[in-house]
Length: 493
Ligand code: AHR
Image (cartoon, rainbow, N blue to C red):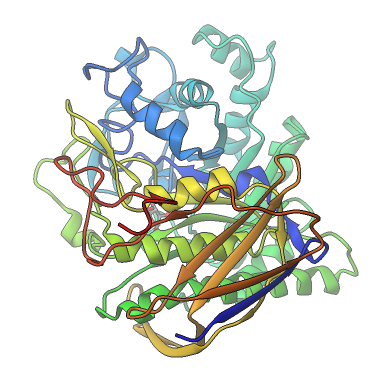
């Protein structure tokens, strides 16, 4: 391939990454909670039942904020079931994942886990089967210091200090027909604004994310965001976005191009949010919470295929095994998020453990890193700072990407995909400039020529590369480091 040229200047900046851009997600789904972060009988479990081997990998992965408890699960969740003496907590049928929820783990345990991991909690409220009243009660239970029935109940349950949860999601994917009590944008907008008002009356310091549509491919996309923000604009800080990349078509070039559709999606949601602002002559800017993103397609199933006899507890579902090409597409998604640091102020990799996750465990056994673990760890550890606006001169290719999930099969045309996808982050405090570069050629190396202006002195401190001749190679319990970053010096390997 011919030289690919990149031009950067210290003063040409897109924005500064918010620490919340590097979040992840724990849902009551499969073995994410039970057998994932929480397994009291595991040899490494502490007194709270938290797996320490998983916690060690979480620290290395370095997520900053954690969304909980769903996802689809939250749309049928009674938060009251998951607090108080464990022996008295009810077992319930979970209609999101067709399994039995024991409620052995709930909000207070999640907060303790977040504190142990030094991660900010992000809670979602149920605006499916529940309403604004249940939502405001949960805020009072969590955040009010004491002296009321609900805050004293928390104290009685053993948590004297308020949890002080700052980031709240107003439901989940409420336009999805698969959701318990899915809603029209008008129905959702009304309930969301009423919930938002009361939640903030209880605790004015919280920040709220309204549900955007479940994906760009949804027939509701666009009109949904517009209508929902018409209702909620004055009461929320964020609108949410969700994307799962796939390679259903077996077209690797299109797959690793598909992260560019996330760029379009972000630009479109920004345009809609700013249109709502313009209609009101408002200078308020709604920020984006990309609170579900990942590669996911092999273990995606409709509800009928989810039904297992006997309503199992924590069944091993959505246990996607990630390969090398998934890590490439995933790395591209990280670059898309970084390059929108001015408007995407929160994001959550869906999910954290076992369920479409960077960390895999065996119940009772070891934990290991999937291929996508590595780009995320680099994204979080080196993505903090000012994102420079890169001018890239790269050859391009065309791709057509199939997104067959949901009500319609859609092909998205990508007429000019640059072989190079890149983000440049300047961490002023650490004195580091990090380049995240994805070579999307499946056959050729890419000689990169980078001109960097405005810095007095630069030298290469470290160079890491994730690559493998076998794009289908995976990490397993037996070979957990089959795919791992190579350092400078090892690069010739
Ligand atoms: O992350 C898995 C599921 O994907 C979530 O529960 C839901 O919100 C989305 O459809």
